[in-house]
Length: 311
Image 1 (cartoon, rainbow, N blue to C red):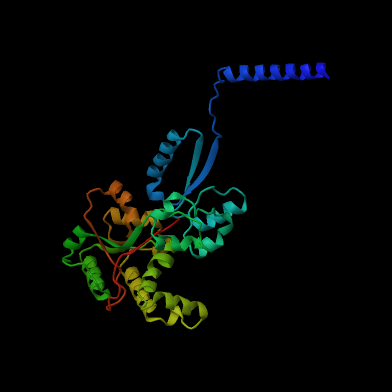
Image 2: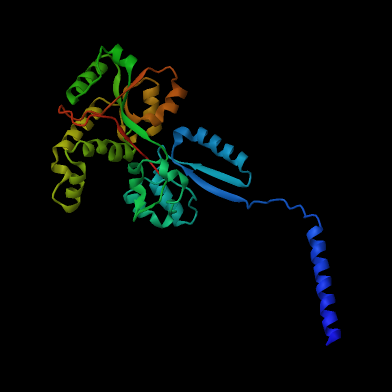
C-alpha cells in the first residue's frame, strides 16, 4: 500500500512539473487566418455601375478575405426574368435586390432574416414595411429615389414656355410650343415595362382619394381600373406623350431614351434622380428642372413620387 501511495505521489509530482513547464513556455505565435469568402452580387443600377464597382473594390481592400463578383443588369434587360432564370439553374447571386410587398413574399425562401441588424433602428418604419413579413424584416433599403418629369429649362425658354406646367392642359400647351419650335417634347422609352407598369401607374394609384381602400376594393372585385376616372386620365397623358414623343416608343429602351434627353433631342423625360450620373457624364452643364406628372386638370396630391425602389 505504501509503495502504491508513493507511486501516486510521484506521478502527481511529474504531472504538476509538466503542467508548470507548459505554463511557463512562451505561447506559440499563431496568425489569424480568415476564411476566404466569394460573394456574387447583383447590381440592377446600370447608371452607377462604375461607382458600384469602385465601392466593392474599396470594401475588398479593407476585407482582403472577401472577393465580390458584381453582375450589373438593367437597361434593356428584364431584371426579374433574368433573376428567375439564374435561380432556376442554381447559378443565382448571394445578394440581390427585391422591391418588397408581393415580391418579398415570392422570394421569401431566398431571403435572410435581418431583424437583428444594427441599422434597423435607423430606418423609417414605413421604409421597412414592404419587406416586413410576420414581424420579421427581410431586406435593407438601398436608398430613396424620386421621379416625375425632368425637363430642359433652356429648351423650354427657347420655345417660349415661361412657367412649369401644373395641369394636363398646360402640359399639352407646352408640348405644342416645343413642337412648333422644332423640338421633340417627350423622350418616350416605353420598351421598359417598369416605366409604364410601375412608375406611371403609381401616379394614378397615389391620386385616389383613399389609395389603400382602392387597392383593397380592386382585390375583392368591387372596383376596376378600367372604370376608374383617374386611370382614364392617365391614358390621356399617355396619348399625349406618344403624340408629341419620339418615333418608335415601344422599341426605345432606357439608354436610348436618356440619350435623347441628354443630347437635347427631346425636352422632357419621365425619369428620376437616378439618371443624374448619366446626365453629368453626357451633358454636365445641362439646365434641368423637376416637376410632378400632371394627369388631368384637377390637381390632387400633386408631388414627385418618392420611395424606396429596392431592398
